Length: 169
Image 1: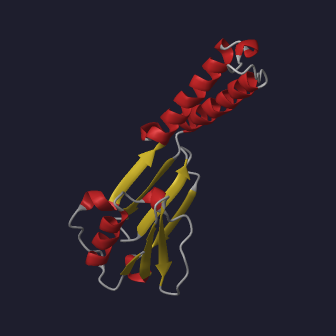
Image 2 (image 1 turned 180 degrees about the vertical axis):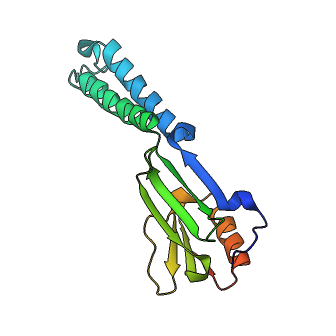
């Protein structure tokens, strides 16, 4: 049985690299270091005490180039991530690293087969885990595939399927 969603936007979530600030920031930071490494004369890279590290400027330049290429590569390939409720089957479907060719990591489970959603929040990072009725954690399901705040999404899913336990740490 497919249940009607009260807030459809929360269960239909998709993002890609080109709309993600982290890849643009990676590109900008890399370009800045590559530019700085290209314009600073390594022989003038000395402190007031007379300590010099001329090798540091080319290292910063090449690290900048690598970081800029990593950011540009993600923007070029534009991998997608997200989740939704399939209108035909009623399954919760999620995907990560999906390319235009359709390749990528994905999973699917009907909400009636979900036993628990575990949300772990600490000062450094958050984690979200989805478990089936057998207690097995579902692969490729994490914070990347659902909207923030994660507890609102989990509570919304549990409101539609009351047997789902939401565990927050």
